[in-house]
Length: 419
Image (tube, one colour):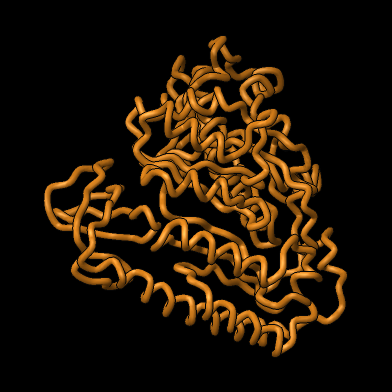
């Protein structure tokens, strides 16, 4: 129980993507500026926020479950459901979550003011709260530079949850990244709902990257997931020009069959995707390339799956995120004919996961005996672990501190790590 006169405590449980994580860090900073103490989600608190996700039914259900769990605490905190699930489900999803307050995308950054007005909690006192540095419980900081997507892929609910297009100014982004570096972060991840659509006037993502390299001292700059149709040759050139931009791209493929890509309303075909990866590989040899693949999309035949499998085998992927199709109510795909048996979809998923692991092993083994840079994220019993520029997990023995960037030569790829 909070002592009389002590500042209220707020906890944030984030469900979903890196963009949600970046926004949670902004929300936490706003609460801290308003006089709250930000605590871990499992700690006692007076305010508990579930920053929700609704990309799948399971994600929305998990968001509601986390809120209901918080509502059963004794003493009970004020429970808030915020973000994407509210945009789709409104008060109904708030009732499922047993939430005291539901707030959508536009209101969630004003939560300290809303709580002051509705529940009598402290009002923000800091005039510079909007400029507060985001609060992360990790060594890697996530920087939100873009929001909104109108691509309209047939399986995706995001255009309904994040329809408003927004990009952060180049100057504000550069300033925040420099401040994050001064605060001790050695790597930042640029993220957005559709990252490649970043636009500040006539300035695009490649110009922003160039400015971050020229005007900040951040040692490592990483891009989160980016659509293939937004990756230009100019962007690849900027990345290739400096090792400070991590040698990794996550580019969703979703299917390796042109017919399925058309049903998905994707903005490329197999030949386009293959050509992009060829250009990227020429610009940056040993580039780590991750991707997403949906198995069992409506209309996916054995032949279509075979096309996807063949393409995955042929392309230089280092990481596969494979999952079976799950119909999301409110999307075009939920109404498509040609449903695939769930057991078949799961079998295809397992097949590609196995293939993906084989490709990951082959990609990682090429770094044995080469110089590799590791950003240390954890240390325990004389062992340091973290991630390489190519987004491969790695571990080393010896004296290394969290946030060190250590160059070493791996001797093996063992148990899913360069060692």
